[in-house]
Length: 171
Image 1 (cartoon, rainbow, N blue to C red):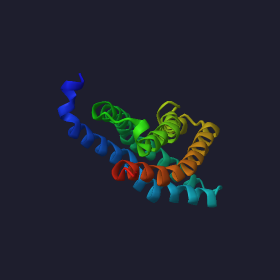
Image 2: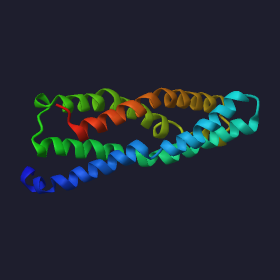
Image 3: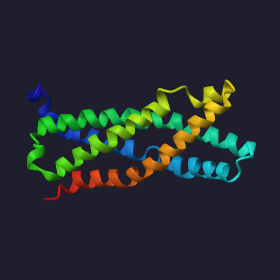
Image 4: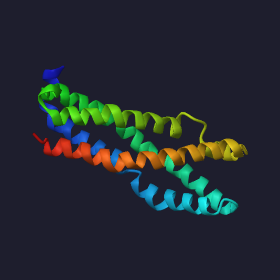
């Protein structure tokens, strides 16, 4: 199998980079320009039904948009493991690779596991809204907002750090 795939290493690496780009940046614009302002408005005006409805619709739209990110992430893992296997990379020989794999295992996989659960493995927020489950919807939206606020730190620090390690390969 390794002999069959070895000539395709550069193409696998290309796919890995494409998946990283999709994963890292696909939701950034929507989060920054739609989700954050909607939540700030709702938090500033907790009695404003229109602000709450707008916030809920923005997070519902975000949940739909995050599908692209969540398709890309397994692609990152598969192509990354293939490159590790095909390229003969040894984590023990490269501290930068150990650091990058540490970010993947300790930050990205747990973060994405929670993100997948929030966005895909719980009852959809839209369905909660349509079913009139106001309290459940509020709890789900609040939890999602808290997750986004915490994960933002890791998105803006750990993702660039992993990209830096992969490109520069510091010694």
